[in-house]
Image (tube, rainbow, N blue to C red; front, side, top):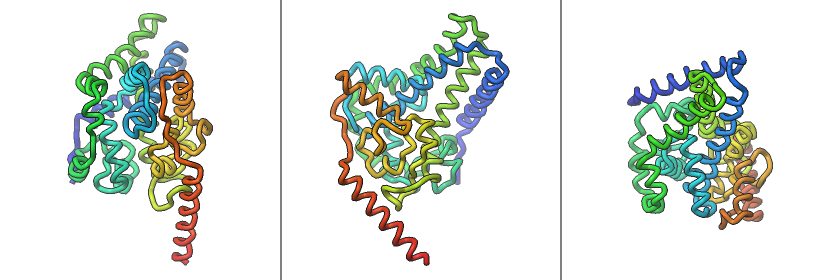
Length: 298
């Protein structure tokens, strides 16, 4: 039986209420263009903090980063305000290891809404905690930067994700403070749903050319929304590949472009990729598996 976390439910209702107000102000022209542009810029930073940072760097260790890049990605992760890096990494590693089972924090088999955002409104299934304790988190347990952010996350997230984005437009170009608050929540709620679409839509809609036996799919719409995270069938097949896609820097994979640039300027190194021969073998195996399933159905 689901145990609802009412604090989270009411928080999401408030966030969406403010975001809808913000959309109204945007559509009716009751906001300064700079406020919209500023939050659009913050949304891009937020995405880098979640995808290039929490996901590809700290969860999968698909590349290595110098301290200045780690600090920048931590700052961006504070803007994204999608749980601390530690919690994000923990949940995502459990998701990969036990994908689409009761031990998966956002198991798609429990429904689209649950995988999208419902899982954040209820207590975790006992299996998530039990199976999660079998995984190795020693790298993030011993990471001083991650532990620092974890300790002060509530303050850092509020300051970077809400306080500064509201105050800057109000102070520098005279935006109404409530309008600035609502536009801030348009950005925040929008980026939340972008990330959530990977857990929901990219586990339902799309193709499965690399592994036809798993739920994650190749979803180009989600890929463009999230700057490269919608090529999810590939990612679950080759989770160590820093590109999270076969397409390298194309097809909306802005995060790969960013990591490539960081590598060129010496702030990232050790970029891991799946070999072309391995990719081709997986695709052939997936095709044969799909063909066999169709023949059995006949």
